[in-house]
Length: 305
Image (cartoon, rainbow, N blue to C red):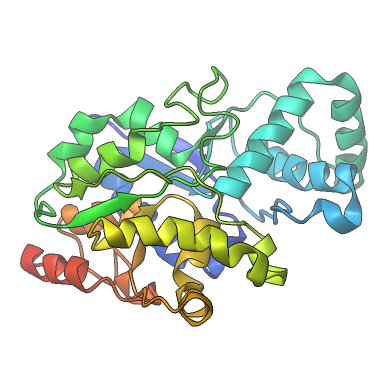
């Protein structure tokens, strides 16, 4: 493999809690794919989906502005994040700073209180876009030593990973917003079967599930049920909040609707780690899933890591 390409990595808050398995598995597979991640020093929360509720637009914008300023202190490498909400916020703020003089001035006035500034000269990218455009499917396939033969996967992209930037030049033009193929391509590259799955970009309710789950249970049911009906062994997703909602609320859905769902929800990077012959827990972090992906774990044992 050619020399690694360096990126400045923004993990986001979920990497320390509900999505440690995304962070751990991505860090594990990155070196094999020629990706070198250098974490932003002293990064902060981007505000995610609810940061604007109390503070308003400017504080929300400055949160991501601070991360970008800290990233720029470390160099001019592209900023990469695996979290859909972090990407949405950070990329969006970067665009605003680049395209709106007033926003740039106000953000830098606030950053100045901490002796920081940001001129808008970094590129913010989603990890999946980097895998598509910088790594490519051929290199990904080259790392597969333990193909996930027989594993049936429903690829659930969610909405924030592809909307609104994926189909734009600034977003890397790596896929479409309505019928994205990148996740199915990841699944196939790992040797698994990517099932036909209609709700791949449906909304799970996002952060509304945190404070009003009754309103989002029907949405999540419409995501889980087609995967179960299609015979999926797992649902795979790139989004931390999608993963948490679709996995965590299956019991509540069963109680409300009389269903019997119990399907594991994994991250694409966990599939890659197993397919690359890596350790099931240390690298793929399968021990972090609430609903254990037993078939994937068996395939990891077969890989001998």
